[in-house]
Image (cartoon, rainbow, N blue to C red; front, top):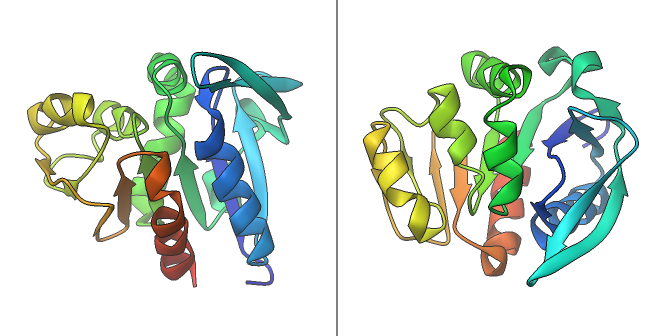
Length: 174
C-alpha cells in the first residue's frame, strides 16, 4: 500500500457514510487518501434527512491531476453527484481515470458521474435503485448486487455495502 494514493471526489451534500467510512478504511489499509472538491476549505455531508459533518478538502479540483492517483472513489448522496455532474472539470477528472483504466469506484448515486462521463457505457454496474434507468439509458447493464466489478469500474448500491465496496477498491489497487 505504501506510495499508493486514492482520490475521493465530492462536494457539499455527499452521503456522509459513503465518504467517511471508505476514507477511514482505505487509510487504515495504508493508502494516502485525498478529498478533492471543486471548492477549497470544507465540504458538508448529508446524514439521514439533514446536513451532517464537514470534512476538509485536501486538494481543490483545479489543482488535482488524475496522474497523481491510483484510484478514484465517488461517494453518493443525491445532492453530491448531481452537483458534480454539472461541473465540467469534475466530469473530465472521472473521464481521465476511465481512459487510464485506473480503478474507478462509485456507490449509491455516485454512478451518475459514470453516466455523465461516458464510463458506464457497455459496463455491468449497480447503484441505488433509482439510478438504474439512467445507467441503462447510458448503455450499462444494471445488476442488483452488493458490489459489481467490471474491468476497472467498481460499483455498489448503498451504505450497507460499504465494507464490500471498500474491499473491492483495495483489491483493485493492490
